[in-house]
Length: 572
Image 1 (cartoon, helix red, strand yellow):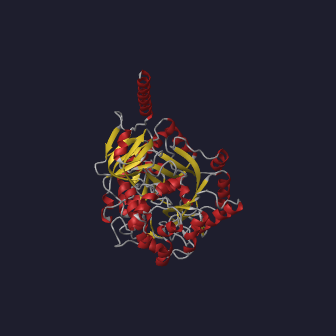
Image 2 (cartoon, helix red, strand yellow):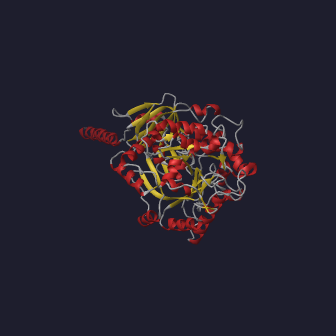
Image 3 (tube, helix red, strand yellow):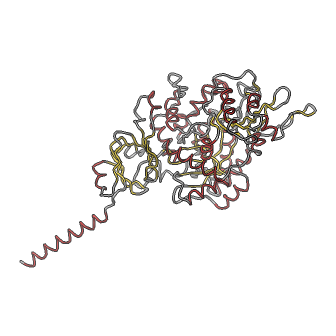
């Protein structure tokens, strides 16, 4: 009898011991988020009631009842109070330091006339020492309410600008970044006076142009490569302003729900800055960077190979090539002439044999190649060079994930080639809202309808689309780009039904283009882009459900919280 009692007692003690061990091994969450609609962008469960994080990772996503089992006295509860959460948004193509410097310099994005620019510069002159440069960005003549009386090739001339700033050199970048506007003082510093000598126009260059008037005098407009004629005289940024610009850009990302950023073109100086910020623990953003610089920088990195950051803060594994200009400045490289500038085809800003050469080296050294192309000629030529490189190395079926940045205007014959060659189009939907009203003047109705902003055709062909804003070309606001994706309207809500409505994205496609598909475009879909156990704890919280509200209410959506790496970095 004693033996039986002793046996039972041992069984009870063993059970209690095992139970204690099980409790000790139970993982508890750092944060439990609940109380609203949570879109996972995960096909296995599209919405969940709650998410549990542990430090910087997602521990659990599912029912709130089950999530509570991960709670202990240290766990923080965040009640969404009916708000909506998605994976952290990814800016799929932008210019991080350009975003920061746009905060420091004249922001001309909302100017609606040449006079607005003149007034902004005149005001800046009042607080600027004589001889100091005045810099700005964001003007776009095709978006103005009216054009000045004197224009040359569709652009304003410098005279009014020069009058208000006789002692300060001024250089104002076009919204696209592919043209610039200088005053007389800036051109004087650059040594630009008359552009005719013995009847011969000088300063012509391959891949760019200085626009001159009927007398051969510079109008102040510098297109594509000609920008360098002014740029090289602008003083370099200081370490202090670089840090300030970096912090402003990071703050802007947090306010806009952006937790990751594809930085479309960085130099060796920018790499050094980012390394310093990361080492100092001040990089609270995930940067996926594309190398952009001279042959020396490229060769250095091809020899070293990609740098995949185990902390997922600063990764370098892609190369940026700029192969044509922008549609607004008539620099995009077209198969047929511009409708509003007969005989002009835009600019090939990089020889195509270099694209093939870099594509081959990229494939051999595990680098992704991302080529800027807006016009249909540029897109076709780049697809051709990618294809030649892939075939030469017998790598057509490899997971190279080469990209074309913008892919804004395509010949219909080239649309299926993206899927055939496994090339990813990185397209900024907001460009449709901003550009479509005047783009038809550049391309004509047929080219617009058959090949411009062909989102649905590309998606149906089997390729993902990486979305974004191309900031500072457009504001960083992802809500505006989401709205453009699903409505194909201007931000004023026109036209009724949207431009070429058959090319609209669904809301699910649009959200995926800003999350999982954008992560895929950076080889990062296994660590972010959806709310799944084991992925990074990056989330964006909205004041309303942008997946279900009426279309005309989407633009009322606001970012109310951003969680990065398991920590709240922004709260409205």
